[in-house]
Amino acid sequence: MRLTLHVWRQSDARDPGRFETYEANDISESMSFLDMLDLVNERLTEDGKEPIAFDHDCREGICGSCGMMINGVPHGPKTMTTACQLHMRSFSDGDEIWIEPWRAQAFPVIRDLVVSRDPFDRIIESGGYVSVRTGSAPDAHTIPVEKQAADEAMDAAVCIGCGACVAACPNASAMLFTAAKVAHLALMPQGAPERYDRVLSMVETHDEEGFGNCTNHGACEVACPKGISVDYIAQLNRDLFRATLSSRPANEAKE
Amino acid sequence: MRRVATLYRSTVGKKILMALSGLLLFLFIIGHMLGNLKVFEGPDAFNAYAEGIRTFGYPFLPEYGFLWLARLVLLGAVGLHILAAVQLWQRSRGARARKYRKETNLSFSYASRTMRWGGVLIFLFVVYHILHMTTGQAHPDFVYGDVYANFIIGFQSPLVVGFYLVAQVALCLHLYHGIWSMTQSVGATHPKYDRMRRPVAGVFATGIFIGFIIPPMAVLLGLLS
Ligand code: HEM
Ligand code: FES
Image (cartoon, rainbow over all chains, first blue to last red; front, top):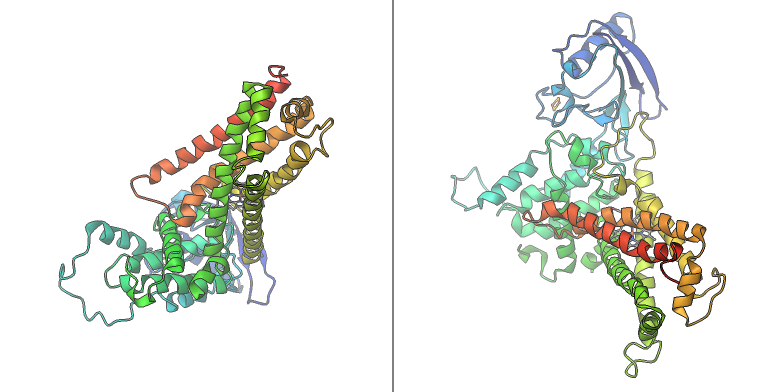
């Protein structure tokens, strides 16, 4: 098929940037979206032009590297799918496609479609861990974990940190990311003792990094390639509320 | 101290304060709507009801004591609600300084996107409403204490009723998202009841809308005089 691409080009953080239009011919519908960009890049290189920079690594939807706004939707039109797993059969001949980087003050553009997601690392550093040595993987069931808690923790732990939630949010809030990272530890016995300190620190870092506040639009849940629910945000809010009112020393705080 | 201060300092804490002040305003709104429906019991009952609010708790409280206490609490809630709303609004504007060229709306509801400007409209309405029905500056023929007459005369003009109607639409939308959002913001959620949160918000929002527009419409249609 034949497509018209409007791609955001920006050589570095200081460059104001602009859209450039490319005709992409002979695109097969079994290509992935990134394969399609690879092909466009090959042709750009042959013409002596700069290829389009974009992040990618695993190309199987698990690393969280790839990510771009495709016609105003993070990772494109298919739900529960990363850009690398999106196939060109989701488009039809003659389509115009607008491709933009994630837009957030906290995520400065490094080049073209590549943004810095360092703030996510700093949110994790501020609390997304368990302080005690938990040793090597224990035998299954030595520590009892309720089935429901295990399931809920896993459903939060599928977060790949791609940033689609921030990109989709009208407030550029990273609350879905933060909530998923808080929840998958809080729900586990190993993570429970630091539950309250963790939520306070991670929310504080979230705010310092310049993300907006969550107004419960729910766009993040729709955009998330892993389908993480905004129910985790409610849980984070509840934990923070309890943490602010709790009089117990932080390390003794229990559920 | 760091912990309690988080309630005001953090974005999540501010939303909790908004939810709590919003809850208070929501409860007031329900009471106000039910009170308005007393107008159908006739001038004497309606005026006695207004008188009852003025003298509530008398002689244990001074005559206007309860009324002013309620006013102060509501004023505080409105102030806190708007302060947090404006601070968070500014913050979020800064967080996405550069907009997308192509935008697709992924939000759950239209109501969530109109909270801020809808809130401003509700605020302007409340100011007008107080000048209209409480202090009388915006009323054509205000008689202090004759609440029933003020009510009937106040709603003779289709223009006035029209503005009340627009404000009630804004309030209905605000509450449809607000009631759901409130449970989210304080984390009052439960896997068993989560699916009912939207419908319950819808029922309250529409119930309040209908309850508020019935009396002015009845005056306009000549059913009350
Ligand atoms: C009748 C008066 C009002 C009532 C009953 C009311 C109620 C509520 C409730 C229950 C919420 C949900 C809080 C939450 O998200 O946790 C809310 C949110 C909000 N209200 Fe109000 N409100 C009123 C007036 C106003 C006014 C005058 C403004 C003016 C600026 C305003 C602006 C907002 C905004 C911006 C939100 C945030 C929505 C969000 O972040 O999800 N409200 N309101
Ligand atoms: S490249 Fe790893 S998730 Fe897309």
